[in-house]
Length: 591
Ligand code: GTP
Ligand code: SPV
Ligand code: MN
Image (cartoon, rainbow, N blue to C red; front, top):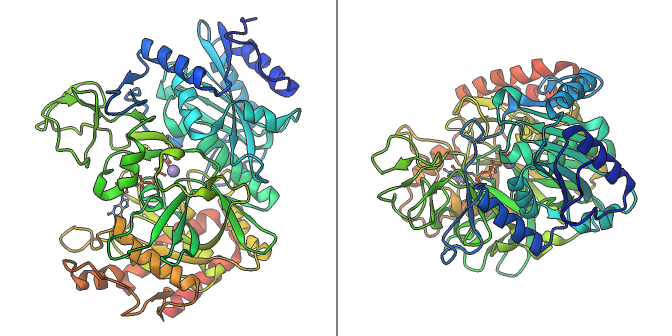
């Protein structure tokens, strides 16, 4: 057996130690490192990662505690075609997931992991998803042979001893195994076993594929647990809007990957909104459970942000720019000669010369982008200047608004409100969005992405929609449901709505609607802001006609939209709740 170094096993939990033994027996590491989450451990592992060339220190005067990482160029995004839900019955995974029988997948992965850590160190990473003491908080243990994963997990989750403290002698924790292998797309699998609360990921070292607490546990396994236990695991940001009088209203928003969650969660209100503040609770994932008062309460299971770098600037996201000044790991951005980072859309002009995300010389004349479009920063939430105090509240925050949003250059208005919960579930379930670089695939093509969960729902999507409908019975004061689109374009191909901080104007209308004091007009789609409901103070250069265009409802476009949603209806038909079909009928008849 391998030596247990440095430091011996730091838990007496038999389920953990025997599982670690089993994995060590299979993967044959030279050393086992039991992570404790301490500062000393972080320094030692960072030093080692630098020696091994896994991390490059950035200019420590400019960016204290910041490091740079390049992934293998074949491994830069999530890979949905390699992501599997392995349930005993294929139907439980449903038609929107890849499925393989658990036995077959275990056998395949066991063969790939056999001896995979020979000569290497195996890290045992205990972590919590959710504030300690929260009824929703879950324990995971990730075994990995990647120092990059250990250091990133330390930012993204509450990593270390506190996880064992919560677990005590219970066998109920998520078992996550990650082996890098040779980072070969032919041998890349992200396999979920919801019936065993287990995940095995091989052949990648990229964020969402390997930080197993995030998409794998908090969303795919989480959604499975949520259906069983009566809560929701969602691809949503959580924010708190504070009015000048100090009244706080909480909203969650589901936008597909790289469609603006981090930006919206960290929104800086424009000068005209003096005294208004937006606080961040989470930027990617929300776990929501009905509280004793009949409202829906949300926690952020994560402890850091793994955000899209390109497009991030003082103008688009000033809070993020401040957050990533220190203690941040940057992946696949460009590296400047003075040891700083740069990306397309950064405040600084393009550097005269730098190294691109592949490590090749780049100049402003280069045809390729300097930073990969899905390059990311990984920063602790504690660095966010607008982090809400409630971020750590074990009970979470009461949600007043649920916002669905997508990236659509046509059809979808800037904002509308659903008539009621069932209609809102229809709006979320039939959401379509243009694909982005966050996943390997056809960028720009509109695809149906129910509730922004298509890549992350760990069970049958039809049952998932039904679970949403049923949740209404457990929530006596349901949040209001809205749909937004920051991405509609005019005939000139430009965005009609300036977005970013200006989205505060839309958010204010949403908040006012939740409190019953904002004008709205009924349309076939739902409620929309009345002519004077929308505050445009300070937007003197904005053409009000563009707002009308952004908000316009076009019957022809909507006919196509309904036809497009047929794809989903046909796919999910055996498990599709009839309410959705009725909602579509009602929508068509309103046209
Ligand atoms: P994941 O981390 O992949 O789940 O994504 P996310 O939803 O957090 O994405 P993020 O906020 O990082 O979105 C990044 C992309 O959305 C960038 O291309 C931004 O420029 C763009 N974006 C964000 N907000 C707006 C907006 O209000 N208007 C426009 N036009 N673009 C926006
Ligand atoms: C997403 O793609 O939705 C992300 C980034 O949030 S990753 O964690 O890599 O999946
Ligand atoms: Mn995401």
